[in-house]
Image 1 (tube, rainbow over the protein chains, first blue to last red):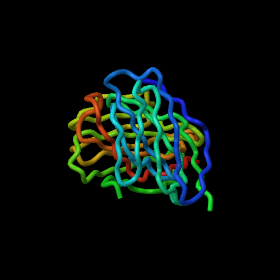
Image 2 (tube, rainbow over the protein chains, first blue to last red):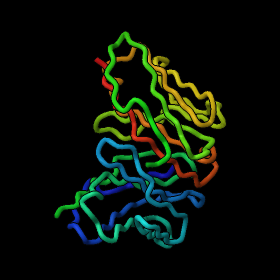
Image 3 (tube, helix red, strand yellow):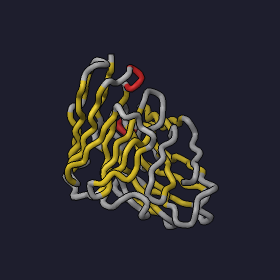
Length: 107
Length: 116
């Protein structure tokens, strides 16, 4: 599976959009981009995934660049409950978790 | 609520004890997974079961013994553990076996294990 690079931490003000970047320059043509998050001491929670097109669901939007070498997860209106570790994973089935990005949403 | 439950949520055991962790999924999935998350470390995949058959064992010590009696239930039997086995143990399930393309995994809340 391709490796991803994420910033170790980010801050966001409550109510503002949180934009979490991920680089995956070695992604293969059949690998999907997945985003999960893990709130402290809980199990990871699936957020969204995509292959080539941008995707949106009730939780977030996923923007994938045309060359597929990077992506951005957007939480449109961050709340304090969105404070978590966010994992970007590229995968054709198997999930390999890295260190992720610690997102802190502050009042 | 993800449809994957784990019991117990917390467990303290001595190195000579035998205990079991239980996972149940209510999603009609055919694949189930055990992961380990030690402090400050990424999740590590331990075992994979597809249609009740073990298809992956990532060099896990034999003191961890998984069991999958049916597609809805997964157990992790623990015996003679070491203090370094203290971690969060997570169960997950997916509709189809991993390796078949897009396959979202849904995780349980985990069992926090402390080995004394």
